[in-house]
Amino acid sequence: MKILTGNDLKSGAVVWWNGQGWTTHITDAVDAGEEAESIMAREESARRVNSVYSIAAELTDNGPRPAHIKDRVRALGPTVRPDLAMKAAEEKGWDWVI
Image (cartoon, rainbow, N blue to C red; front, side, top):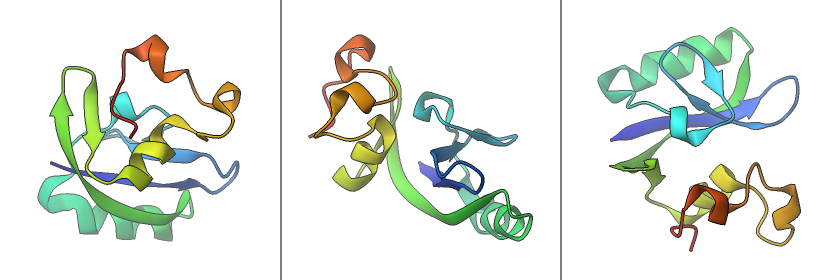
C-alpha cells in the first residue's frame, strides 16, 4: 500500500490523501497506487500542499499504518507533548507508534 502525505500550505498541518482531497486524519488515507506520482504533481502545482511524498503503509483494522517510524509520529503528533497530538493514541487503540 502506498499513501501520500504532506503539509497543508495554509496551516502547516500534516495531511493525508483521502482519494478526493486532503485530511488531517490518517484513518481516512487511501492507497494512491499507480496514481501517486500524478496526484503529487497535480496537488503541489495547485499549491494546496507542499513537501508531498509517498510512503509505504500496511492496512490494519484501524486504518493505514505507516511502515517508517517517522511517519507514524507524523500521523499522531508530537511524542514529547501528547497533549498536542491529534488524539491520544490510547483513545484510538493504536499501539504502533514505536
